[in-house]
Amino acid sequence: MKKKETPVRKNRITFLASDEEKRIIESYLKKYRIANRSRWMRETLITFIIRKLDQDYPMLFDEQEMRR
Image 1 (cartoon, rainbow, N blue to C red):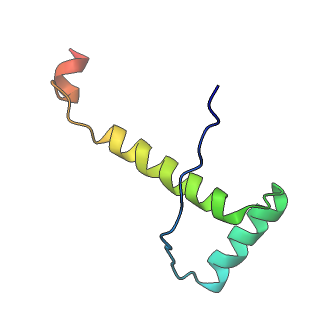
Image 2 (cartoon, one colour):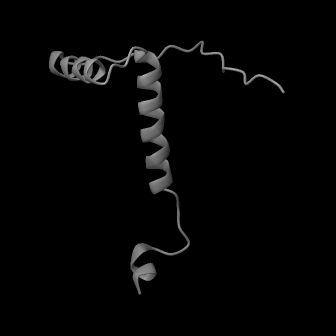
């Protein structure tokens, strides 16, 4: 059986946050005992993006036609 390979992460993404945003994030990480901040940020961001793309996916019928 072959061991699952971890993708090589060589691209850095940074962003700025206000003092309040930083405080909220740090409070959340502490409350839920999240030690790996990078992994949490990556998973949170990718999950949001995938959900949004799924919602925006074109459908054969629009919402009105499906409700009939």
